[in-house]
Amino acid sequence: MRAILPPAGNEIIGQLKTTAVVSVISLQDVLFSAQIIYQHTYEVIPLLLVATLWYLLMTSVLSVGQYYVERYFGRGVTRRENRKEHQQWLKQSHCARSPSVSLA
Image (cartoon, rainbow, N blue to C red):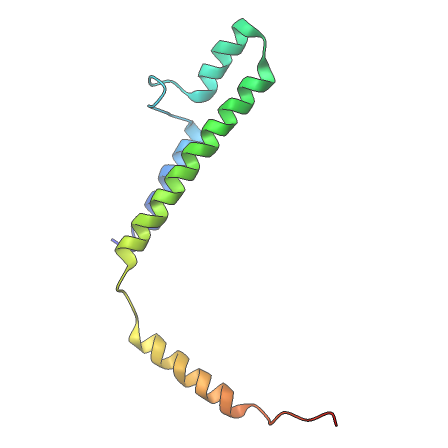
């Protein structure tokens, strides 16, 4: 499950960005809704900015949600072999250092 979640979450967020399918706004695309409105009001830039903020909000919420789901499923997973190797490497690199040279 831990290996499946990151690519699955990225795929969901990517689908939101590329296809812009949003079920929150009555099954219509955010950009399409903005186009319908600015065809009547002729205020293109403000409505495109609002659509951009909606996309930013939705992708941010999905990204934060993905982070917490990955953190939940990744908790408690440690690799002792890697930890031991890292500790041995630290000991070796610490012992291999030459004594500090004083400038006095």
